Length: 155
Image 1 (spheres, helix red, strand yellow):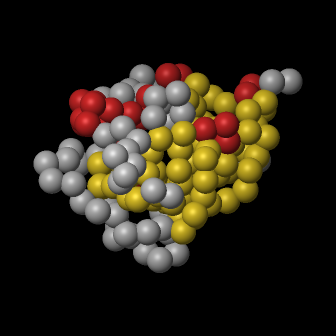
Image 2 (image 1 turned 30 degrees about the horizontal axis):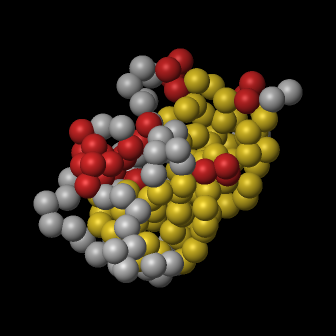
């Protein structure tokens, strides 16, 4: 049985999963600095341990209605083969060892679900598995990849 470790997070009442191998840190939300002329999929940037990181508007990407950032929200720092970025989520749940045979391919559900790897059936709940590299690959996020690298305030 092939498995993948996922960290579960929520946006409103929807559950999502992120590959733990791409998880750098989970922390409390912080103030996000808006960036002039940034695309709608970019909330702004944060200073995380001396590095400026883009904050992806994961709610917009997932089709979940906007809500102001709350003190109870969590910040997920993602580090993958493309870049490092942050996502603000409502809550973070458990880590699960997901049987890959129970992940229904996103293409078999709908051909346009480019940001999802698939949907994991975890008992009575369904967890949408985010593809954290593909989510950065569209017109809006080309702006992120071109214009924001992990930068330090020290230069």
